Image 1: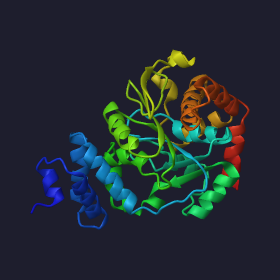
Image 2 (image 1 turned 60 degrees about the vertical axis):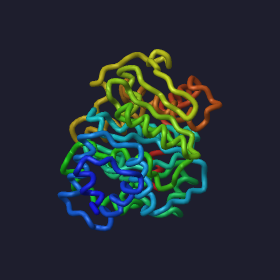
Image 3 (image 1 turned 90 degrees about the horizontal axis):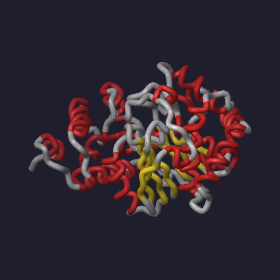
Length: 328
């Protein structure tokens, strides 16, 4: 009988069970680094199927360190891998939400194909990662937000970390990240790099108890970039939205770049927190924060969510929260 790796090499689309077993073989050390790189390359060359993504997701969750949080929370994240090198929009949006009264349990990792992932920027600015439910709940109670650094809760990811970094492009693990929050939060705001991935997420999340909003800018961003119209898919609707529909002007791609170094990214990050950023940088954080807030509290209109998030940044509530978070 052929192994699941051999089936994949011969062009076979894996069943959910086969995909589950393939990932178990990776984590258990039954595949060598070259084979792991080959698996990642297969899913760069061809689309992943719904069964495969579901099997991989279930396999990763079955071997993760579970997190039990004591509050109703939302995760705000993106797949990454859009090759757009934006600044840390989702991490800033998570902080805006927390400072606005929304409980956030954010899952993130180091960047594998960009200058600065959420874990990179937080670590650089002095945030101390927590690795157990008690500490995370204390952080939620104190600051309304906690961050789960993926390698601390998904030790199996160590088996693929080197290959991900060496490949330097998005891989199937970018697709998995937003689906495997170890706290299994009830609300999810997810940016995706392609509509094909959005469709797969939609099918998977429909089977969960989550409320969710998926966004994809039609010029390729895994967030609402305000550089073009964007697709929004939720548990209740699907539509294409123009920035002007939400009161924003189209802005240039250059206006939301994240720089060339982690210091560049950190400078932008702090400038947004301090309300010392450009209007374009602030607006892209506001719109993503507001749409996430509407996902969490659908009875609050998007227009009202925009107003709340704007005030939270401009009053420096977000900056105050972040200072307290990294010093306490």
